[in-house]
Length: 369
Ligand SMILES: Cc1ncc(COP(=O)(O)O)c(C=O)c1O
Image: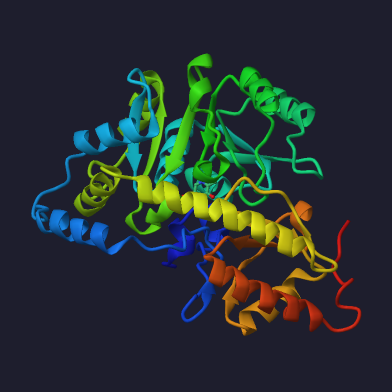
C-alpha cells in the first residue's frame, strides 16, 4: 500500500506553495508594510508593567471585553455593530471564507489584490474569481457586475486602499458592486490609517457589508491583532468559526495598554504619510520610473526591469517586494514600504544606482505597456 501525503492531502493544497517570507536579516526592510518606528521608552515600560501582571497560566478571555471597549472608543465603532477579534486580519479573512464555503461557493475580488483572499479560498475549497482592474487601477464596474451575475459570489473582498496598487477605489463604484452582490462584501481597511478615510460611516447603509481592520500596519504587526465589525447577524455567524482562544493573553494585554493612549500610533502614521509624499516625489524624478499615487503606507512604482532592480536593491541591502509576474497589470512593478526618512534615503540612493547599473537593453526587457 502506498502511503504519503499525495494519498490524503487535497489536490488544491498539494498544488499550493507555502507563503514565502523573504529573509530580511541585516537588510533595510521595506517589503511588508510594517511601521518602521518603535514605541517610546515610556510606553515600553508601561507595557512591561502590564505584561508582568498577565496570567499566563490562564486561557485568554475570548470575549475580551476591555480590549473591545478600547477598540470601540478609539476607532469610533458604533454600539449597534458587533466586533470580532482575530489573530491578525488574516485569520478573519480565513474565518469569513470558511463560514461561507458551501459546496460550489465563489469568492471574488478585483485583481491584483491581497493574495490571501485567493489562498484562503483555495484552502477552503471555494472557487476564487479575480476580476481585473482597469489599467489605471480603478474598478472595472461593468466587468465586476457581469462577473457577479455569472458567478453569484458568496463573498466579495475589496481592499480599501488596495494592496498592492495603493489606490482607493471610487466610493460610487464600490456602492454599485455592493448593490449587485447577494452575498457579503468585506471592505478590508488594513491601510486605513494612511488613507484618512473609511467605509465605517457607510456601514449602516448596507445590510451585507462588514469591515475589516488590523493593528498590524499601524505599528503592531508583531502582536497579530485584527478585527471585523458589522451587523450582529453576520459577525455572530463568523464567531462560530473562530477557534475558542484565538487572541492570546499577551496580544490582548499589549493592545489594551497601547490603546489607552494611541496618540503615538497616530503620530507615527502621520509621519509615514508625510514620508510617502517625499518618496513619491523623489521616485518620480528618477528617469524611466513611474510611481503610482498611494493612499497606503507603501508606494507602487513601475521600473524598467523589476527583477533586475529588485536584485540590485537586495545586493545593496534593501528589501522591497518584486511584483513582476504576480499579475500583468503590475508587471515590472516594485512595492516599496515607506520607511523612516533615513531608510527612505538609503533606499533612494540604492535605487538610483541599481537603475544606473542596468545593463544596456535590460531597461526594455520584460517591459509591459
Ligand atoms: C489588504 C490586506 N488585508 C489584510 C492583511 C493582513 O494583515 P494582518 O493579518 O497582519 O492583520 C494584509 C497584509 O498585508 C493586507 O495587505
